[in-house]
Length: 397
Image: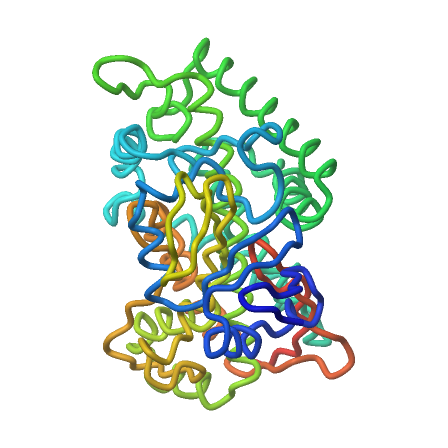
């Protein structure tokens, strides 16, 4: 239901979550900058050019909250997750501090551990006599949790707790603020205690918590609330988006056997194919708050309003991508925004790419043949992050 730029649109609508791409196509063509009163009011631009322009305009659009729902400034407590929720100039200082820990060289050091984790998970799945697995709950959702736990120097025994926090904050809590707030307090309390413990008794010098405690900006140690906030965002951003990408990629290969067969025949295509799968199934929609009255493609927006950045729509914009809805595994030019755009482009993109590559490499070796389980449905969650909640497959060897 549309009136001018106003549309009665719900980002949590189950049909939209299940298949958002036709909706984005229609919006891009008919109402490329739309507004809905749902969830406290949201502006939703859908063209790549507009989304990119917003990410680069930090004068008019603030990252003080990147949540697609929940309180805006002045309406209640906001989640602090540096550097994602920081604006210049402090954003750049904190981001530069973290870059070495997520460089290509640093992530290369994490790859052997990641491969061990992936192989252990696959070995458990391969031992099942009936070949029925849930690639989301039995595989994809475990890989990044175990990797980030190792990088933080936290026991893998807390995996179930981490997963529960992510689920309650980004899934259940997406439209239930009380659930989100309770889980967020638990996460912050846990990391606050851990930071205090590490200050008293430092851990290994190469784990991220010890690194952050020892970090300095202009000679001064990082504020305790910033350390806790960084750990908070690493937990959320480092887990849910990555398990979403692994799950979506396996869903694609299960439903497009021609692409699976091509990767088996031409494994050297995998790095390019990964970029294409990231483009096709970008998981994240982020948000900005309008700092001062401005326009988006000639449409007025006003200070204090929330603007969503649906990167999944940008990545299927036909003005930017030829055959936008097809998986072109050898696509040479791929300026996708799966990791965001502008100064807030995902700090952990090297880590996510590595985890996705290792997961697919090892999966294809172990299970060269697999498809959807005809007896069980695939289910999806959406909102901030779209991902497969369940992905039942039948695998062959």
